Structures are given as C-alpha cells and as structure tokens.
Image 1 (cartoon, rainbow, N blue to C red):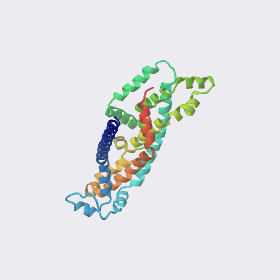
Image 2 (image 1 turned 45 degrees about the vertical axis):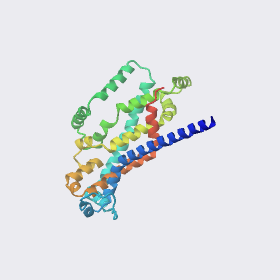
Image 3 (image 1 turned 90 degrees about the horizontal axis):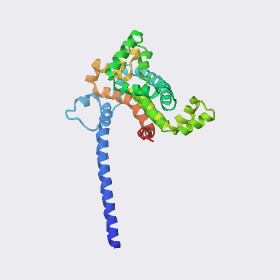
Image 4 (image 1 turned 90 degrees about the vertical axis):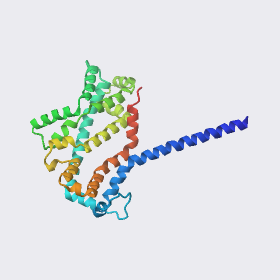
Length: 289
C-alpha cells in the first residue's frame, strides 16, 4: 500500500515537473518573439553605417558597436527640442486628464443626481464613435479658434477619456457604500472623502491610467501632425517622420534606429518602475464585487 502511494506521489511530481517545463518553455519562446524587435532595434542603432549597408545577410551581433548614430540622430533634426515639447505636452495633458477624470468617476460612482445612469450610458455609447470622426471635429474646432501651432491646440482634445472614467468609476464603485455614509455622518465633505479615502484605496488604478495616458501622449502622432507645421511645436513622433521626409531615414537606418531607441527608453523605464502597480490596477479593474 505504501509502495503504491509513493509511486503515485512520484508520478504526480513527475507530471508537475513536465507541466512546469512545458509552460516555461512556451513562455521563453514567447518572450524571445516579443523582445526580439527591441533587441534588433538596439543592435541596429550601434552598428556602423558602412558595416550595416555591407551586410547582405543581416547579422545578429556586432563586434564593433558605436554611438555615433546617437550623435547623428540629435544633430540631423532638433530632437532635443522635440523631446522638451513632448515632455511638456505629456505632463500637462496627463495632469489635466486626472483633474477631469477623477471627479467625473467619483460623481458617477457616488453622487446621486437625476439622470446619472442615462448620462453615463450616453458617455459609454460615445466610445463607439470612430476616432476619425472625432479627430475631424476636433481639427475643425481648433482651426476655427486659431489654436493651430500652439500647445493649447495640442492639449485640449486629449484632456479627457471616457474609457479612463469608466475604469476608475468601476473601481470607485467597489468601495463599500458604508464608508461613504459614515464619512457623511462625520461631516466629511465629498472632496475630502475622495482625496483621503477613495484615491488611496484605488491608487493602483490611478497609477495605471496615468501611465497609459503618458504612453498615449508620448506616442501621439496623427493629432500632432494635423495641428502643427511649425518645428517649435513638433513632438518626438513628428521628429522621426521629419527624418524620413528629409531622406535621412532611408539612407541611414542605424541613426534612425538610434533616435527610436532614445524615444522609446523613457516609456520602457517608466513601465519597469511601475509594472507592479499597472498589473495590480488592471487586475483590480477587471474584478467585480
């Protein structure tokens, strides 16, 4: 009897080991597939221009890495200025988004007013409107207000997001109503309750929507391309396009990849720092009750 039990335990452990090996093997292959474009981007950015063009068969390594492509990326176009413009655009837009989104989510989740559910349903239905229609309307409005080639024109259409309001509202709704009623009995105002109770509890979700908004702003291309034709207001995404239009991108791919590495690095670092908060916020947003 004991021998049979031991055999079953060994078989169970063996199956568990095989299962884990299979899972880790799949994850390793998937990680290689996902990370390979980043590796190739960095590898290309440190290759010499001549050696890159002489490779009839692409090489997966280089014995003579160089940083001259990064210097070329900053000297060919004013990439530093575009970086500063992007930082200003991202920081201001994200801050205004939080100012708009957080109170809106609080109102839909806690305040009782006539037509609340109907208004929220109308908000959600607006997510079905194609982005192309919205951007046409925004472009017409910004142009009529003479806000082209201004930071105001860049920022205003991006200060709110129905999806972020919905995500934060769902998280606020998970907080027990008893806390809110107890706070009201103690004479706590809604704004203080929001700042002292709801935001600390839902901090992972707030961090998540903040990071997502930063990524959205940093990668903004279409809107910035439409409302700016002055280099003083170009973003980094426009800088890459400017490189291609000047012919530099087609002739010197390593330098262009260097510019892409520089532009991508802040987002990658940001994600690595806040990855746990992002995962926690997304998981919390998908949990009901």
